[in-house]
Structures are given as C-alpha cells and as structure tokens.
Length: 463
Image (cartoon, rainbow, N blue to C red; front, side, top):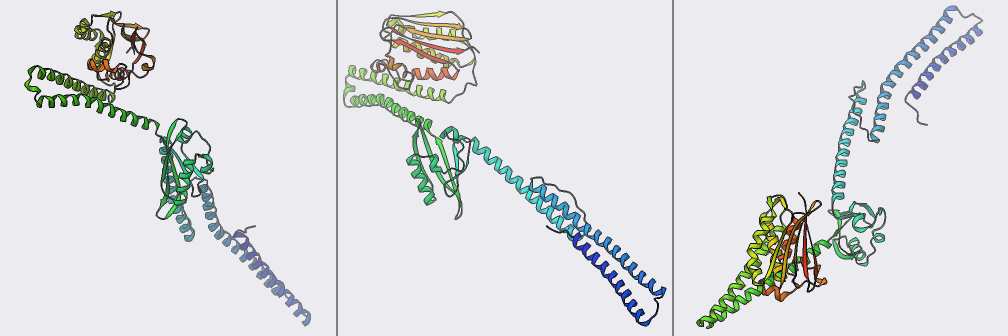
C-alpha cells in the first residue's frame, strides 16, 4: 500500500506529543524518587509546573498538527487535481483549467503539465487529421492498397482490395497466404529479400491485374512495404483498339495515296502525252483524292464526337432533315431504280441537339442502305411509341450474315469489302452513327437476313 504525505506527518506529531508526555512522566518519577529519599512532600508549585509543561506540549503539538495538515493539503490537493487531469487526458479528454497554486514549485509543475498536455493534444489532433485524410484518400483510390510489415504480414488495406482481389478480412495474415499466384509470390519474395521495387502482371478471373510492390523507407531505415494492385483490363483493351485503329487508318490512308502516287509517276513517264490516258488517270487521281478527303473528314468527325458531351445544341425537327437528305440522295437512288419511301407518322423533335450531327446520321444510314441495295425499296419510318421516338431504316438489299451483325459498328469493318471500296466508303459511317446516337442517349439495333434485307432501328427517349 502506498502512503500519503499526511500519514508520516501524523506519525511525527504523535511522536512529539508522546515525547513531551514522557518528559513529564520522567520529571514526576524523578521528583517522586527525590522526595522519597528526602522524606519531603511535593509542593503544589511543583505539581503545577508539571501540568503546565504537559499542557504546553499538547497545545504545541496541536498547533503543529494544524500547520502541517494545512501545508500538506496545499501540496496534495493540486497533485490530486493533476492526477485526475492526467487520467482524463489518457482517455482522450484534454482538460485545461487556469491554475493558481500557493506553492511555487506546485504552480511550476502544473504549468509544465499544461504546456506538455496542450502540445501533446495538438500533436494528437494533427496526427488524427493526417490519419483520417490518408484513410479517405486510400479508400477513394481505384487501386487496391496493401501495407506490409518487414516480415510480409498485412497491417493495413483499403476498401478497393475486396472489389479487385475478392478477399476480405486479411489483416495480420502473411501476404503469401493471401496471394498464392506463383508469379506474384516470386515478385514479393524478391522484393522482401532485396528491399526493392518490383512489379508484374497476371490474368485473373478474365481481368488483367498489375501488381507493384515498393519498400516504405526513410534513409536507411525500412518500415515495411506497400503493394498496389490496378485493374488494367480496360487500359489494355483501349491500347489494342488504338493499335487496331492506327493500323487501319494507316492502311486506309496508304491505299489512295499509293494509287495517286502510282498514276502521277505513270503520267510523268510519258502517259501525259496521250490525252485519253492522261484524262482517265486524272479521273482516278481525283476519285482517290476525294476518297482520301472523306476518310480524313470522317476520322476528324469521329474524334470530335468521342470527345464531346451532350451539353449544347438547339431545338430541331427531324422531318425537314430527313426530307433534305432524301433530296440529296434521290439522284443516286434513281440511277439504281430504288424507291425511297418516307413514312412520316409522327413528328420527332429534339430540344438540345445538333442539326449537322442528325443530318450526318440520316445521310450515313440512307446512303448505306442504297449502297447495299440493288433493287427494291428503302423505307424510312418515324413514329412515337409510348415515351420513345423510333426511327427505322429498312432496305431490300443483300443483307448480312449473322456473324457480322455484332461487328458492323466497329471502325473500318466492312461486310462486303469490294462493294464498299467500289462505292467509295470509308468504313467509318456506321461507327459515326453509333457515336452520335449514344451522344444523345439513344440506342441503335440491327436485324438482317441475307438476300432479304436489313433494318436499322434507332430509339431516343422523349425530351
């Protein structure tokens, strides 16, 4: 048991009191012995002196007790308060009260305690803020983050770990028991051993995951490792699409340029002297140049649509646009003896759209129908079904095989390559249509039967 300061003080006081009383008794005994020997009687004066001495000793003891008690309380009370504040601070409750103690040393101690507490409180608040900020940032990341200690045991993870790796509650496990892919384990083992950066990619559940491990260190001191995991499936797909697009564009641009260059060289070699041959070659050069121009225009238009948001436009009616497109292509239809039918059953109005883009959609769809139709009709129908606008373009053309239906909206994809090239198509028409339709929150579907015909259906929600 710990003793308080008051305990020793009381022991001292009572010791002094007993000492004074013992002195009185000793005086009495001495007087008694002396008087017995001298056969004399103790006088009243001597007895009074003894009682007075004893009384003075008791009074002095009482006064000393009060003084020491007050002094002790002056020291112990502040210490008790400081103790309570320290306990509260340990619970995370910082209490700051202005203190004014009588004892200078106690006042100095209390002030030092307050200064220390305030600095520590500010430091803790700052650390809590930094921790909260770091946790928020980590949990908002699309990457899965795993923190390891130096031995490879998991200490922290963020929210994306469960979504990407399909694991949960993995804290305190060794990373080798969580990620068991041979390639990943080898990467981690090398990093843990050599304390250096390492990375790898794996195919997992039809996803391409990129793993990266790096040491957490400051100077020569290492604190652990951080593992980041990113799902790069879409990135790789986009890279493949970009590669294919560049490859296709290069091929499509190279074809007319090669043709133009070949005929120019032939003309230079002497064919220009033959008027008929020269004019025929110039006609071919003109056709290839126009084809090259259309291709560049379509590529630029497609890029413009892909990088645009539907946050602009004006109120447009679709019927006049369709009628204008029919008028433009009527001559081509007449040459092939194809009838263009426009079934106008309902007015379609867009509150925020581009007239040029909608004209491009109808131009591409109608010209595509005429291109792959040799005889018969091309029918355009506009109607309203419930809360949707529906536009259909139906032809009686050559149709398409089923295996081509899922790819016709891809860039540069052609069902009949010879017919498309002969007609001057760029292979981007339907891709442009799909991007414009999706820009205005619409959908496009296709149904086709070989040697029977094809129907494209475009649907928009009413504004």
